Length: 277
Image 1 (tube, rainbow, N blue to C red):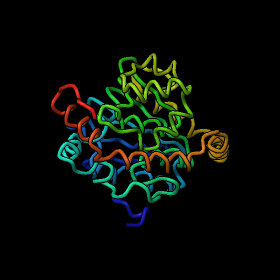
Image 2: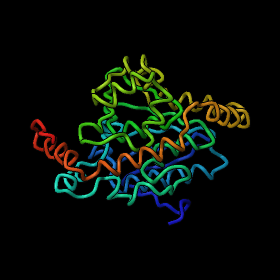
Image 3: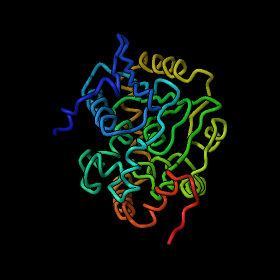
Image 4: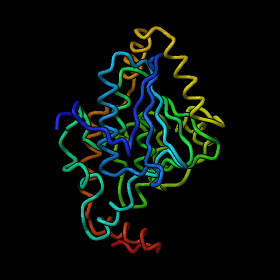
């Protein structure tokens, strides 16, 4: 399927653009805390494609409806892994190594794609953003969060590593030892700590209202200067994203379906301590 022809399922993602050029991308699978299933992956790709080619867009607000921003990968995919099947990313998007979205694969594209949009993206994050859900938020230029938000690099719980551009994005945002702490422990971070360590930009009682206000302010600036600023800031990052994203895919592909990874998933689903070999 051509990237620009990726469909948007209205039961997963809603995209709108107002008269001021502020686009909103809402994750609307609220009954599942906006968990990432195959349709959600495709719909996020479709949203990014649509905004990439819309010259009227001047800023983007990304948020989740219901109780959470995004709870991460759909638990049904972990059931497949517990039975020795493929991972959610492999099962949803095929081989992880081929680059199908520029420098990224399909799973990475739903996080890294926000970085590649020509205009600023502001994520309004509440409830939880776990694993893949956190990586989607990290792809935004800014993250406004509630004080009681819960953020986690949760992949280690399932015997995996962040593979949706998380390593590249975390390394840019946080100190190296902090990234290691989050990646190795999978611990949950609240809003105040998230701002302090670089995972979030600032706190707000109502992140969506704050994100909308900021997007409206950005939309009122010169669009040429805003786009030039984003190009410069993207170019200034010291992270070699192309190499890191490919390395993520190779490492994750080796882990998927390995005995210890399957045991991590089975133990997690059974709510018991894992027994690793």
